[in-house]
Image (cartoon, rainbow, N blue to C red; front, top):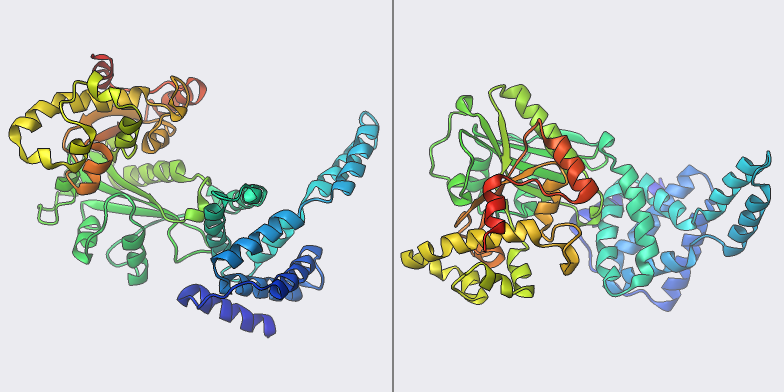
Length: 442
């Protein structure tokens, strides 16, 4: 009953938030004792859950500095015992090639297993524990930027979350206007690509010519992990404002031959590095093909969020593409009201964007992964850079990130595996001939 009361309190703190306090020296010592009991696994299952719930309650009650010290304590004081590792390693080396090799190998693996894993696993066992750990890692990632001593805990927690959020455990759901209001509110909150401005905007994105799919984990049923928004059309969409126009007539989805993925949003910062977006698209394509057999084209209308940042690092790219405006003016988008300037910028910005997608690499060299994160995602899933779209996003964010440029990535079902293999093995970027010509043109 004590553990049940603590779990209820934990749930209320997660849901409503609470005033947070500092971690005192006395509190730190008490915390060390509790973590040691947790790591040693003292008591039975009920005791373990109660202990984990109390620790979670303590963590949620702490201010930012206190949470940092909490995590650092786990990272630095609950690793493998070096003496036990050395003894087990020596025994293993001695036993190599003998009948005892596999027994000593198992003992070495056991010695290498840190107490941090046992602590994290006990958090996972409590109600709301999975969501608690996901949010805890979001904190950890912030602290990690300034404190690299937390890296070992982050690696272990990421490994645990990758196992717990394996795609085999995830459930694909189609969300509609009839889905619970609390869940629809989450979509508005989590949309990361094109802001949902109102309930009317959301309703438009859930109309009969649209689809919205999300992955859920059974231990987090009220939290979408990632969701994709789809428009059913009869053409390759080239302007996001037209696609999201609330006043546009609803397209007859029975005539659709093209599915446009125009927004993909990861919702949980704490799951960074845990990849399931590629499985989402494959599952969604299968679902759409079943419901709409006439669909033959699957493509995106995607932003290029790194374009302006790359140009800032490589200003000569503007000169090489013969762009007649400086970066600051391009980013404001005020030029879009000048018809003459619009005509003058169309070809240069298309050349600039093509060069960016074909040549810009992480690290600034000539090899490596593409600089653009959206490009890395879609190319890594077997898509092809199909078409560039000038003035495709005339929002302030669109001009600030990519001067209004967007790109269509095409998922040709016959070529996905070939493209994926070529990209993974040699970094080859699949591109339509028209985009490739633009990238080469000087």
